[in-house]
Amino acid sequence: MSTTTMAPPKVVSREEWLSARKELLVKEKEHIRQRDALNAERLNLPWVKVEKTYVFDAPDGKKTLRDLFAGRSQLIIQHFMFGPGWKEGCVGCSFSADHLPGALIHLEHHDVTLVVVARATLPELEAFKKRMGWTFPFISSNGSDFNYDYHVSFTPEEMEQGKAYYNYGWQKPDREELSGYSSFYKDAAGDIFHTYSTYARGLEYVLGTYVFLDIAPLGRNEDHGLTDWVRHHDRYDTVKSYCGCH
Image 1 (cartoon, rainbow, N blue to C red):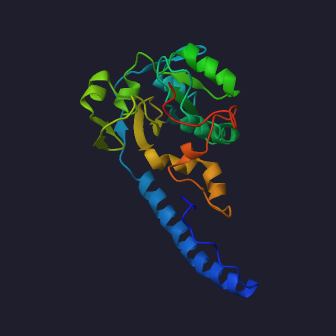
Image 2: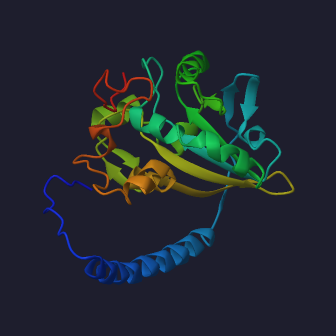
Image 3: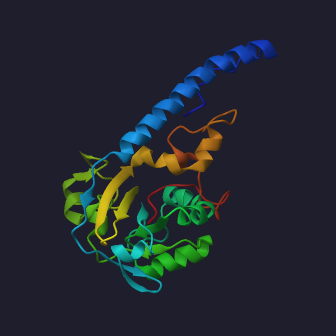
């Protein structure tokens, strides 16, 4: 949320502040209850069986979607904006990926595997991963239909026509790669089911930095989104952030 047009805050007594804070607390608690109800609805979404075999390039060889579960029953994939030939990965996706290392050990001990997938080639991913100091699985879907089937990559024909399906609607894409998260379940028989995908502002749920900013005095303090201020973490104060990435 932009703070550039916000009125200066009132300075009041501690008693007045406490009264206003309690009024807001009522709304915050209602928001939490609504979030819990929404989460329950999310868990009750129907599933779709994944019939197609997808093959990915990983540092230790070719992997199928089933392999990516790494012995667990749940898999979350970050669809990372990094196309073949790009000089570096998307700033926003990198920002999101920076939040993963601390969560991985907890997810993995709760039957959830999380991997990051991009359409760039494996050597391109490995070079960028080394630059950023990341240790999470960074997997290439290059040569696979995976990104296209989950609507985060767009064909040259779609780009030329200016019409592609993203975030559950037809849009005019301004780049051939966009971001998202998708979740999958593998049952005891080895069958895989697509359970959930989210895109656009739905990705904010995993951004812990935003959670902190939302309780900071000036909030997010941005006019056009995270590209106002987020940089690759090794390039702060050196380069303007953008999400064209190539």
